[in-house]
Picture 1 (cartoon, helix red, strand yellow):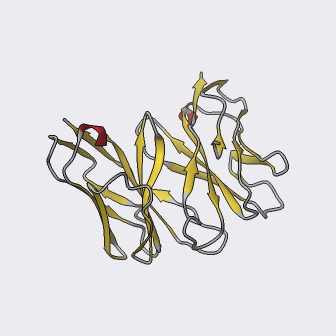
Picture 2 (cartoon, each protein chain N blue to C red):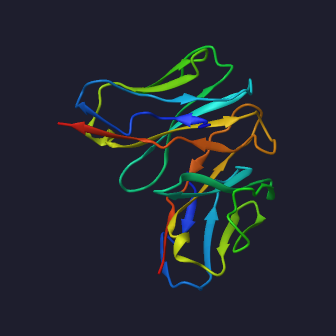
Length: 115
Length: 119
């Protein structure tokens, strides 16, 4: 079975440019998560969706970040305008949410470098 | 206060020996889940094992087992018969609450332990 798919795997851009990260969750999963990993802050949740609806976006750093999930098989995380401090690895994860048990499976990540 | 604490920034083990990676957690929620993930140098996050707060038995998955001590709020990962391919960063994570809640699906991660397996 295909795991979580993320694209692009690597992105290098210049400050001020728009960046769009894409994620395809595992088929049948109903929850999708965006995480960011940096040396300074470790792994932190940015936003998560359940049944395509954003449930918790309290981790989104600021208005420059936005995320959408137009359908069950696709999500985007957009940064506009990008800044050097946004450089990080961005992970998408998905799970099948049910009472008391859900395991999040991660995609390979997108390594973002903003110059 | 840290919700997940991994006190060992780095650990070394000889190939074929067992190793324990420590994890303590802090929550007042009676329903929670504990997870361990492995992150090799290639960067992906690989799910290893899960323990629910109401599970009576310690979780096991092949060479991985979770030593769950609820009263002490610890969830240590035990890797038996270490292999060179086990060299990686290991993260302990916790989900508080059950099912679909405002924060019920959020995973909080520890800072990780870098495990090196020596030949």
